[in-house]
Length: 239
Ligand code: ATP
Image (cartoon, rainbow, N blue to C red):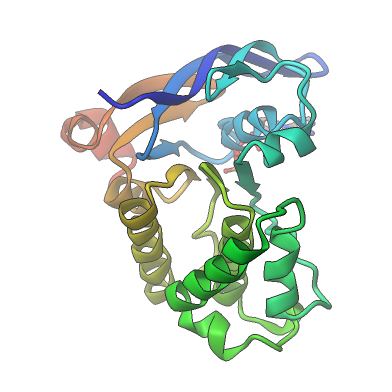
């Protein structure tokens, strides 16, 4: 059985009096693609923000065996837990190449940084063609590829992606899905994918959780999800 890389136990987050996450628990195994699906406002981003160290929370988050309570976000990144937010957070006036290099700012293994750049340009040839283009002038899909590429330049062990398909054309969504699977298969990267696009998550994740109004309603394998009547009626074919 694979080792657990991320374990979330009884996670509770409040925004003022609003109880946004209500006792969320899930665990992610090393090397898997894990999907968290659920509608707008369900709490997916809140969960990722808590894991990344951006929010106060109740409960326990353990990454690679270490309790993350009180660990600052920079240290979490240095430890290989990389978060690609929904906003992508690119440096708009920097080129594609410069944005990728910014992803490697905490690394001191210069030789492997070069190899990783090559790997990312192979994975996303569109970025290779546009190395000198400013990030701001890239299309939405290209910016998403760049955000994933920059996250990869941080040499993640666990990559958290928030809504990587949001607003993208189907052909680009397919490219991104294929790239994620290739990364998982060839590098053993673990991916936590939060998605409103349940079809995309179901297409690529081996195990999933469904979150609604701050609570996990169901966790299981891909097949358990696609066989579940409620999931099928409410979430499959929505996108
Ligand atoms: P989406 O897919 O639309 O991004 P989500 O599942 O990621 O949704 P969250 O963004 O985590 O959901 O939001 C969960 C709940 O917490 C929502 O009701 C949202 O309005 C609320 N919320 C999120 N951030 C804040 C904040 N900074 N202050 C107050 N309430 C917030």
